[in-house]
Structures are given as C-alpha cells and as structure tokens.
Image (cartoon, rainbow, N blue to C red; front, side, top):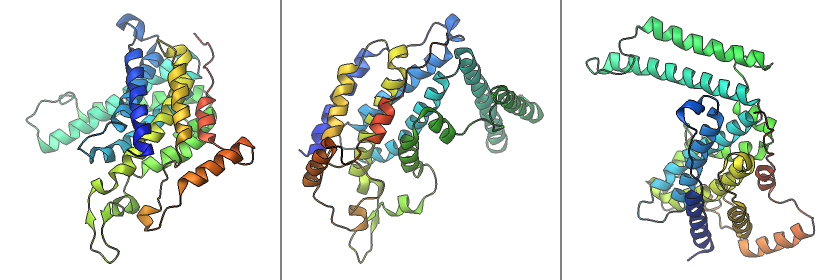
Length: 313
C-alpha cells in the first residue's frame, strides 16, 4: 500500500464519521423562506462530504474517478458563493437566493420547452402550454430583478460580481486561481485534457481511455476535496453545523501535512519526464518551513482563515 493509498483510506474514515455526525437538514417549510441560506449551506456541505467519500473509495470502476474532476469545480464555486452570501445581511442573502432560483427555473423551462417542441412535441413537459413569448418575458423579468438587486447593493457590475470577484472579496484567491482553474478544463473543450488520456510508446500509437489517468484524477479529487471541506467547516461550522468537528478537521490537516507530493495540474509523468524523489524534498521542505525560510500551505491558511459570518439575523 502506498503513502497516498493509506492517506486516502484515512480520509475516507474521517468523512464517514462526518457524514454520521452532521444531519444536513433544512428548517421546516414554514421557516424555510427566512432561512434559505442555511438550507443551501446544508445542501452544499452534504455534497462536499459525499464527494469526498466517493473520491476516497477504492473499487474496480476506475473510470468514475474522471467524473469527479468537474464536480470538484462545483464544490469550489459553492464554497466561494455561499461564503460571499454569508457575509451579506441575512435578509438580502435570502432575497438573492430566491432571485437566482427564479432565474434558473425560468431559463430551464424556456430551454426545455424549445427542445421538446422541436424534438418530441407529443410528450407533455412542465411549461409546455406556456407560450414562447410568455416564457421569454419571464426570463427577462427575472434577469431585470437580479440587476435591480445588484444595483441596490451598489455593485459596479450590472449582473453582479463574478465568481472571481467573490473569491477576492472573501479571501479565497488561491482556491479560485488553482482549484477552480484546474478543474474548469474538464467542463470546457481543452486539447490538453483530451490528449493526456492517450498512453502508449513514445513512437505511438497511443490508446485513449480515461482509465489511463484514473489514479491522477482520484488523487487530485481526494486531496483538494479535503482542502475544500476544511474551508466549508471554517466558513460555516460555527453557525450552521449541528456538531463541532474540531477533531476531524485537525486530523485532515495533519494528513495533508504528511503528503509528500501535492497533486499538480501538469505532471512529470504525462510529459514523459522522470519525477523527482519526493521523500527527501519533502523532508527538506519541512526543515525549511520550521525555520520560516519558505512559505507553506497558503491555500490551507486561506480556507482556515474564513471568518465566521457576522450575526445579521
């Protein structure tokens, strides 16, 4: 068993404990309108925990590790967006969530109606009976309400801040610039992401399969999924988690510190270069960090440094 395997098994045990401890429940229907933010934090945290369990699960289906990468991007955006919302006045955050929900529903109904009208008009679908003009009007109204909201918040941008803007506002620069970027290549066309799935002799031909990089995908998802969960706990744990997770978080950070090699975006192996010996470089780095000669773990400091939202109830 490799060092990474043993750490991933330890990660798995921690996240299974976390899943048992946290309830991930919303308020009652009557109370939900006044506590939408908490409901979305519960949903996103649940997704993060389930993701980490999947990322550290061993099994025969190696190709599923590839599918984790694009979802890591979603977790990163959840952390950024919800942290940003948690720093708003509670009433305004709930208002924004509802406006975003309306916009997404109207856009989805519009796309659904158009698709089935062209492809399968005999199938009843929600929104099928609504005219195209009415659907377009609903989409425009939802967009205008969002723009009015952001104008009332004195946003310099008509459609509100981007995810990058939000990341900068809450101090998640490294999280955005590395995790968000590195996982975005799996949801957009990217020649490098496609070509790296081909493995074979240097002279070719190569055989393409997402299985060829399954260890990399799993290792990347396991490591940075754990980092993101540290951020979820730091940002929301005090106000939104049903129990304290200090022991589990301390153990996660300890395990992250044991990792001799943090997953990279582009690896030595895929470029047909021999990787360095990580044990001596890791040991040397430990000594230099203890002597404050080199920086270490800026992203860990960043996610741990997420402050408790102000009491805006």
